[in-house]
Image 1 (cartoon, rainbow, N blue to C red):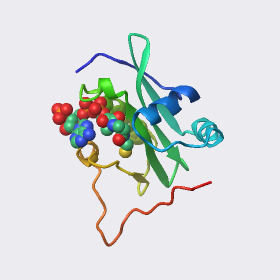
Image 2 (image 1 turned 180 degrees about the vertical axis):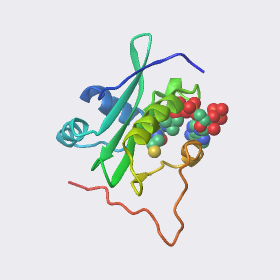
Image 3 (image 1 turned 90 degrees about the horizontal axis):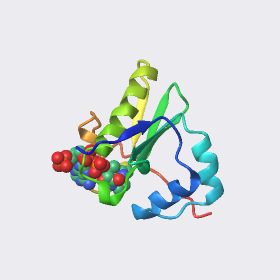
Image 4 (image 1 turned 45 degrees about the vertical axis):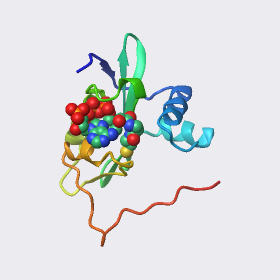
Length: 137
Ligand SMILES: CC(C)(COP(=O)(O)OP(=O)(O)OC[C@H]1O[C@@H](n2cnc3c(N)ncnc32)[C@H](O)[C@@H]1OP(=O)(O)O)[C@@H](O)C(=O)NCCC(=O)NCCS
């Protein structure tokens, strides 16, 4: 377990874009990123030695649906418990704000399902798949 400090805040736009690229994710339109970050329901950043090392966000309508997105730990800091701390903060937010019937969902990246299973998430059946479009712009 590496020591880190969690701060409830949105990452800066440049950091957000850099961490996404570092995770190998497709580029996102900069304006979309700026608008999206500003509309987070909740966002938490992790720091070590004053440096950003990870973050995660919750977006949604604040009542019926929460969507957990952009949980990213800097590649050289992975598997040291940072992602779990970020998810711990996110789940504390969820516990404080979700009500009976609120759906809390996420789209797991390839191979990452076991990370989220620790927090109670389960894959939906093939008969009820999560579906999405990534807009081409
Ligand atoms: C997924 C991610 C956030 C996990 O963060 P992390 O700090 O490495 O996670 P932790 O160290 O807290 O991991 C705790 C446990 O979760 C599980 N886990 C973590 N990453 C995993 C992975 N890539 N695959 C399978 N299990 C994983 C392991 O059981 C791990 O315990 P262990 O290291 O003792 O085996 C990080 O790997 C990451 O940023 N990946 C790139 C971006 C990404 O795919 N984000 C998820 C988007 S849906």
